[in-house]
Amino acid sequence: NKLAQPKVGIAATSSGVGIAYTDVIQDHITSSKISELPFDGAVKLGGDGTSSSLKISDHADLELGSNSFTMEMWLYPMDTSGSNYGTVVSKGVSFQLYWKNVTQSLDLYVSNNGSDYNMINNGTTYAGSVPIGEWIHVALVRNGDVWSIYTNGQRSYGPVTAAGTIHNNGNDLAIGDYSGSYSTYELDGLVSDFRLVNGTAVYTDNFDPPTTRLTNITNTKVLCCQSTTSA
Image (cartoon, rainbow, N blue to C red; front, side, top):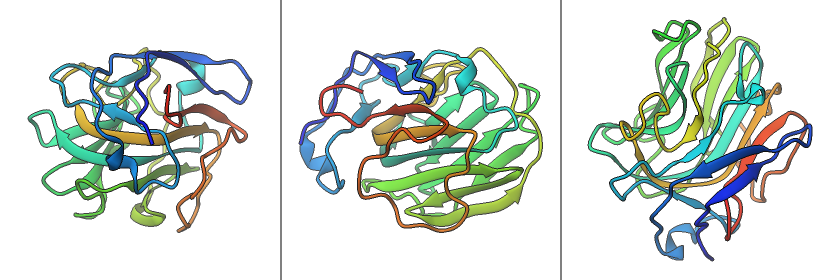
């Protein structure tokens, strides 16, 4: 097993048009950390004192709006960058999913005006749902106006009803850092098999976490962190 140490790549889209992404990942750890995954391939985030994250430039395919969507990945949290919050995924103020190291849980913030969290404010999974130093499958799902977060296939947040259109901004979609102000809330950890499906709620109830790599299903806009040689 080897960890990916990517430089530049292309994220898959259902239309076949790739979204370019780059990163400034400068660190990696031994393959023993991914020995519990059912497949090879993970990207190291943070841990080097710089903004070490995967950044996907703004694109129409990344605007979630009022769509149903599914954002999922395998996550291995290790630490945060001096604060209690380490960003798992963000798109400026409009959308932020954090790992909290004190409670070892996830925390969701969503805005439809780009200034405050008037759709979801502090949408938190239960304490211990995402423990430090373990691989956990995470799936954030919006199904119509109903939101849920699943950890290892079990609903740990929701179902919560939150209507509205997520604010459309020009920020990157960032994995591992807050794209509204880079280097502010970095996550030190690993991510593998990240997929954004914009337009479909893939999971609507508890499920068994995948044991094979995710694929480019209908409405897939980002598919990354699967390779041993690139993101």
